Length: 110
Length: 114
Image 1 (cartoon, helix red, strand yellow):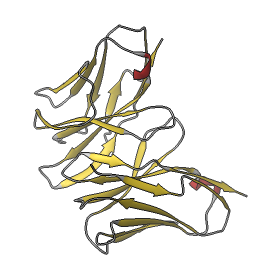
Image 2 (cartoon, one colour; image 1 turned 90 degrees about the vertical axis):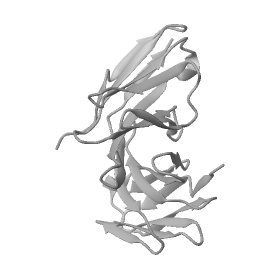
Image 3 (cartoon, one colour; image 1 turned 30 degrees about the vertical axis):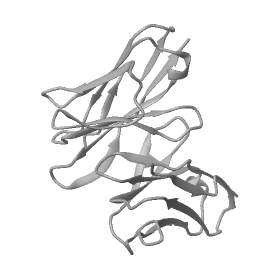
């Protein structure tokens, strides 16, 4: 059974600081996703990572994938309040059946 | 751009009643996924359909059934509702035939069972 673990589960940051969220998974995967979710809202797709060494960046967020280590990271640069949300990683072991991590609730304080 | 449409957005039912949730995927998307997200939980995969055929099955209770119709919309039917079925239900769609596995999520249906 595929297990996906995120850490930390809760993260409180000061504005302007950098931090990294980690996502470990237990079996070989086809692809890995990062999503953002605001309270009571839907999931917004941030990144889709398909291959070893993949790195994608959008604004203050950068995601990377190491398939050999079964590890993905979501790096936050110079955090701003608008980034406060819950971030999920999700892993597919075959097309379309995603297993989600527990989520990381990020709070960015002024 | 068109997004995934779900209806209704909110639904209140009593125990042992039935509920039907509807999902309209993005036009030309051939795959639909259903997820259940309980309060404070991560989304749990329920079931998916590709080209109107069941593709994968997750932790979907036997009381639930789903199908995808000829126009690609999908319905999740839930019977003998229990208090524990109260959750956000998300539908997502993707274009598997085009090799795009990125899932686009709808706004969700909030089901409350009393």
